Length: 399
Length: 172
Image: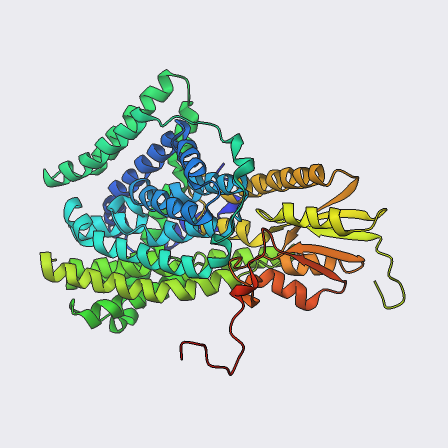
């Protein structure tokens, strides 16, 4: 349910954008131009949200849970490897939202069934939702925004980000293996695993998702917006689910999350107004030009820092116009920063601060120590290897 | 249990995923007749916190908070585990489910117990300090009651003892 109580930022952004237009901080026509540029991105996001929701409805994540439970029973280390594969692919193809909202509860339930400690497995989901969201434009809203602004083709984006994506996941896997060594060497008896239900793999849905993926690359290569492929994929699954009465039209609209789409639009206008009224000038000296290795490292570091100060969504909106003059390489370095960076402080967001305050009021502050230690081990290392991989990729196949 | 009395009446058993059978068995085998058992399970708040945090990072998109779902699943899993442990124990017992940081919750809950039974939660392949994870180490260091610490499976042989300090190993 989209209760405004859950998202004060979304509620504030729309009036904020209206006020900025009213006082002339951004002209009506520039706001409209920004909205026009963001429109297709927002439509693309809505299609992906609906697609992921329909995959869940058709039992895709339950089937993943069944597979993990059968193969990971009695072996927590093996289970972690499976969680890494599924969370990385889910994030890359169906976006980080799907991993956080749809996959994580399934992973927790699987760990509980197998009588193993859930912490490494759940932390892997929350980490990979960020660091494994590098591969495709659809993996993260930040990527969609950068993809629309950078003019890169879908296939080129994926080709340049494939090795950084694998490198970032590799760092996470290596750190998790050491950090949770005690939990992973546990040898639970798989007695309680007999209750694993055999969820069938939804072949039709998987096929549609695979065709949608191919459609992204094909549409982009043909000069069309790949959002059309997402619409087509979502439409096929939606019609089938509606015909089988597996889902209601209301649920589909809810999955598209219109209030959030409005929020992104308003946020884009607010950031545009701030950037053109001095924020852009203030930040320009922080962002080096060019795509040399030191420049890319610095860009990624600034982006990661900003994502931790104010959430990666405003961070990417602020940094994109500053990075674009240096070309696609600089834009992708911004993405490495804003996508990997948030693992340092949970969400790297003001929301974290709000949330901590709320929990304090209820008398229990969250235990941030372990999560932050894990972030300190993975984020700087992940950033460095991912930037190195990007730099090498740019040299090899060109920006 | 204080210096003068040796009667063990109240036995707390800390049950955790994967190792609870060993703790329950040790309590059954070693506690005196007439002891009153309390099964204690702690659901780490950090897990649901991490999920809620990740969801907040999405500005709430996706529509439903997976933290609430995970909290619900965690409660069900804890109840299942306590029921299985109670089954194995066979005799009447109290069940105590706490949410929070495991090590502190266990020390607080068992402060007045005559005995706390728990399993090692670290590296089980060799004898040594690493066989205690962070939580068990904290409890052993801070417990206000006597502690019975058991190996979750067969203990590693004494052959896994590290060589004594300041003595060259045979290969040197």
